[in-house]
Image 1 (cartoon, rainbow over the protein chains, first blue to last red):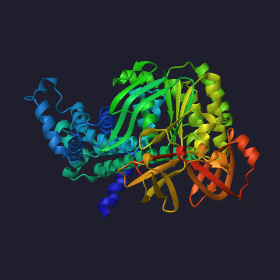
Image 2: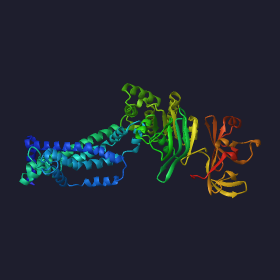
Image 3: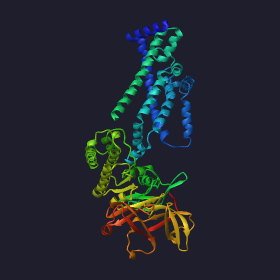
Image 4: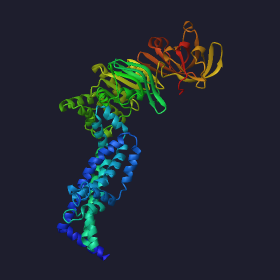
Length: 234
Length: 344
């Protein structure tokens, strides 16, 4: 108990003193998670919309595959991407291995299914009259899609939040593709694992608290916007 | 011709929801589409709005054959607007909702603002422009939806039961706006309704839909008939399990076990004189309701079943029937029609 108490106390001191290592690690984590989420959103939201709104043979199979991908272990993605970007891989000459870009690639693969599945669910709940109304008022299919996405924005926003939460807390991809290089690819989770291995709990606890605060702040922001709009509607 | 359709069919699964042999709709007129629930009114309106495609048959709009190309349908939708039975508002204010169609057409902002102000004034919603569109009542929502359609100045306005679930005040505003837009801008209007009187008040033409088919029979005085006796030239039936009724065998489908009988309200005579009576049924009943309907008077009678008569105004003035009076009616055989299709 004393160990935990001392660690929390020391972690708070790290925060107060704006510890350089701590800020650097948090910065790397936020940067890779932000870009991974952004790229996954650009792929996943339109992809989810197209799957939700089109009917094609094998749609159910695609949905089953996407749902299965939600449970894909990060180490499997790490291995898969590694096989492409390692020196012997077909993308080896690009020199991506052990860079932040490699982590972003792996994390995008991890969360595209999350965003797609949640976008499909959000759009499927939207009343079909929105589509009909937009079309009869003269919208083309892109303008109609924007109407639907606007009406489903909270569900889609929730998908993006969930995806961000997934990548900022994952460790397998960051460790395997990033290599945990200090100042370059060391993220909060890989740093926590390293500090634990070393038996140094102070930085690990500080990073753990930071992770929790970030998760809490993002959810708070989401609820703030949602709540404000609900209030506006009354 | 505005619309010309031939052998138009729409099939959902194993059910044919629309089966129209021929339909011609003239421009700049008001048409009303009357029929009971499930008659195919909404399906027809959605096809005419180019939102759904027919399963088979041909459809022409202003002389152009309608194909299946998305580009053509998109262009046609810009000339035709469908007002839904239960319209839905987009997130935002009344103003932004009405603005939507103009924005997608890239109408310049000053013109957008002018047209929105005019149309909101027309439907009596000018003071609601900044209100949240989701916070409106049912009647107000319908008026905003009407404004959202009218602001586009469409060639054709299709309205699916525009006055359903709306109070009298809102009904009156909606109907007057429709009437005005047809007279002032020559907009062709097709609207569906359950109410024959509403249709007759506004429409130049009435289309009757029953079981997906256009019908000549009116949507009132429809009874289920069960045969209780057959003679050489006539058949005696019981209508809706109560009223005993006789009519000539030749209008009765020969092999049908039961039929649907419809009686034209405008051909029923109230308190006829001897010379007006020939082959037909004389019955007596109690007058339960009187209502003015355009240039005629609608009389509802209880003759064991509810029967509606539509009396010419001069005849009404001569006879002066009152609610509560017991009266004699005469139903000539010519007023009776039979069909076996789709018993309700």
